[in-house]
Image 1 (cartoon, rainbow, N blue to C red):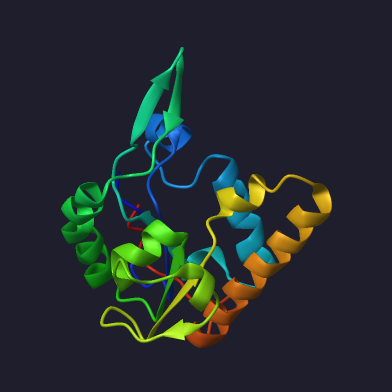
Image 2 (image 1 turned 60 degrees about the vertical axis):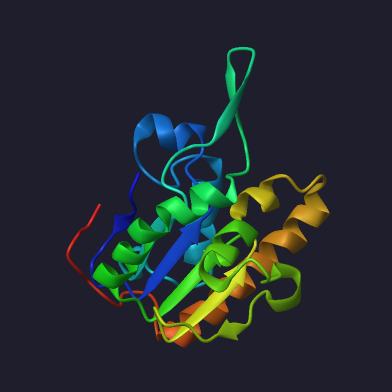
Length: 181
C-alpha cells in the first residue's frame, strides 16, 4: 500500500506499516492510530493539504490469533525490500520535512543505530528533506494505560509535530497540491 496526500505536501509522515484496518481498506492511517494522528496534526497546526502519509513497509505483517490478524513487527528484510518504494514516494513529493512515526520508521530512514528515545523531537539532517523529525507512533499513545499518561503522551506527540510544522513553514490554510492518493 502506498501513501496518500498531495504532491506538494510540505510534510511527509512515515509510519511503520499498514495495520489490519488499513490493509482491509487499502488506505494508510484510517484506523484508530490514523484518527489520533489526524487530531494531533490539527492540534499542531498542520493543514491536511500540507501532509502526505505513508509507511516504511508497504504491507501488513501479521500473525493469526484465532479469527484475528495481530500486528507483527516487520523484519529488517521487509523494511529493506520496501525501501525503494519509500524513496520513490519521497522523490515524488520532495517534502520540506519528514516525520518518522515510531522507531521502525525512523530506523528505516536514519539507520538501525538510530534511537528514538535519544533523538525524539529533534531536527536531523537528511538527504530527502531539509530535516527529519522522529517521534512516537500514534498507536503508542493509544496503548498508554491510563488517561493522565495518555494525555501527557499525546501532548508530547503534538509538541514533536509542532517542531516539524515550524521547520516546514506550514500552518493552517497553507499549501494546495495535486492529489497523489
